Each structure stands twice: as C-alpha cells, then as structure tokens.
Image (cartoon, rainbow, N blue to C red; front, top):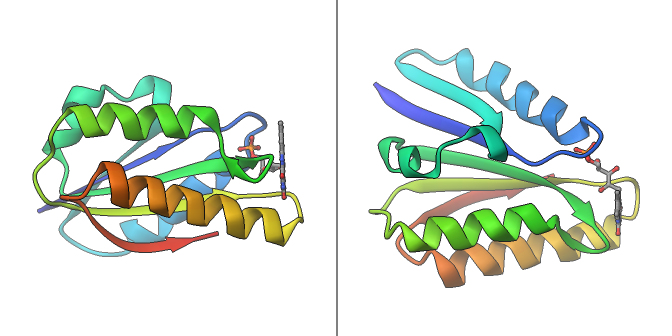
Length: 123
Ligand SMILES: Cc1cc2nc3c(=O)[nH]c(=O)nc-3n(C[C@H](O)[C@H](O)[C@H](O)COP(=O)(O)O)c2cc1C
C-alpha cells in the first residue's frame, strides 16, 4: 500500500478544490491510501509516515503563500528519509507570476529538502 498525503494552503478555496481534484485522480488507482487536509489540520510529525507528499499553495504576489514556506521549513527540520514530493500552485491569471512562484517553490524544496525526490510540479 502506497500512502499519499495531500496538503494545501488556501484563502478562498481554489487550492482546496485543486487538491480535491488531484485526490479524485489518485483514488482511481488501487493500493493507494490517501489523506487530504489543510496545512493547519495536518500533524507535521505524521508526514514521515507517507511515501508521497503532494503539496499546493496559492500564488501570492509572485511567490508561494507564506504558509507554504513555513511548511517547507518545518519539513526540513524533520530530516525526512527519501520520498517523492509533488508541488503545485493556483493563480488568478497572471501566468508570469505563477511561473515565478512555482519555480521559487521548486527551488525552495530542492534546497531545503535535498533528500526528497521532487518528481513533478504543475499548476
Ligand atoms: C494577497 C494575494 C496576492 C495574489 N497575487 C497573485 C499574483 O501575483 N499572481 C496571480 O496570478 N494571482 C495572484 N493572486 C490570486 C491567487 O493566487 C488565486 O486567486 C488563487 O487561486 C487563490 O487560491 P485560494 O482560493 O486557494 O486562496 C493573489 C491573491 C492574493 C489573496
């Protein structure tokens, strides 16, 4: 059984909807156990129990929301063993700023969580 954790930040609900769509897609596969929740609902210590972490945040002024940065910092403190991680972002039409925000998030994860395998990021 592969355990997948989907965590998101959201202010108005768009990123929650995107996370729920991802959940629907993942649930089609067999032998995958999924848990979904807002960052505030997810116990950071439990993150180590999952094989894959999918994490999403809204774009705020060309960067991932501040909560996303906090969660990456928290994950870095946990010294996680190698696992797969996917990050995504939502935006409101300014594609250049989303591109910048997702690249910043990718760089942040690569720098602070070098043991994790960042296999995909999308919007
Ligand atoms: C403070 C703030 C700053 C934002 N800055 C950008 C931006 O620079 N570029 C953009 O395309 N969207 C921007 N947005 C729009 C959000 O990224 C977009 O509406 C997102 O889907 C909201 O997600 P949520 O409903 O999960 O909070 C901003 C929204 C807020 C509240």
